[in-house]
Image 1 (cartoon, helix red, strand yellow):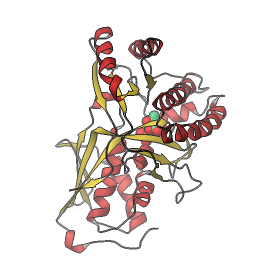
Image 2 (cartoon, helix red, strand yellow):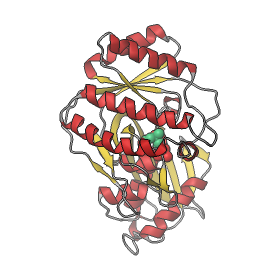
Image 3 (tube, rainbow, N blue to C red):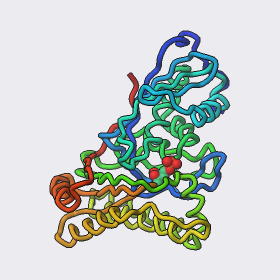
Length: 330
Ligand code: PMV
C-alpha cells in the first residue's frame, strides 16, 4: 500500500492527461512466475520509441468506469479491473471516464498496451493527487500490462523481475545519450487468429526448453547492458535477435498447443535481414506477439534498409523509429 487515501477533492471535475511512448524489448519478457501480480520469469530491457505513443485523459464522472479509445466507446472490463487494483493500492476513488488516443498503428505489432497502461497509470495518479516516483508508477502499471512498466522512461529501461509485488518494477538503464540506433518496423498484416501475449506465454512455458531460455536470458541481459554501455549497436542487435528468435522457438516447441506468430512474409523479411548482413549492412531482427519484424540498425543505415524492403516486398508498409521520451503530463 503506497498511501491510504489520495482523493484530491479539488480535481473532481478536472481532466488529467498523460502521454506515454511505447517500447520495444531487446531482452524479452515472455512468461509469468506469478499471474496475480504479473511477475515475470526474467528481467527485460527495452528501448522507448519516439514515434508511437498513447495520450490518456481521465475524468471523474458517471457511475461506472468507462473507456473511450480514439473517440469510440470500448469494452471497459480490463480497465475497470486495473482501476480496482489502483484503488486497492492508492485508496478508493470515484468512477472514471478514460479517454485514450492511440498513436500506435494497430497493425505495427508494437504493443499499444505498454503505452496505454503507462499513460493511464500516470493520468489517474495525477488526477487523484498521488505524488509517486517513477518506479512506484512502473510497479503499478505492471499490473495492467507487464511491458507498460518500462514505458515511463526515456531511452533504455530495465524491468527487474523482482521476487514480489514490491520489488518488480522498471527503472532507467544508465545508457549513453544519443546512441545512433534506429528501428525499422516492417508491418505485415495477418489474417491469422491472434494469440494474446498472456496465452502465448502460458503455452511457451510448457516448452521443454523454457528453463534454458530463462537461464540464457539472464546472461543475455548482462551482455546487453555491456553492449549498450559500449554503444556497440552491432552487439545490441545480435543479442536482441538471438533472444527474440529463441523466444519464438519456445512457441514452436510448446508441449501444449504449439504455435507460431510467423507468417511466410515474416520469413521473407528475416531472409532479407540475413542477406543485408551478408552485404555488410548492420541489420538484426526482433519480433513480439505478432508477425511483424522490427529491424534494429544504425541510424545511418535505416534509409537503405527501407529501400531494400520496398524493393523486395513492395506491399508491406514500413515505419522508422528511434529513441523516445519518458512519461509526460499536459
Ligand atoms: O506486456 P504484454 O503482456 O503486452 O507482453 C509483452 C510481451 C512482448 O512484447 C512479446 C515482450 C516484451 O517484453 O515486451
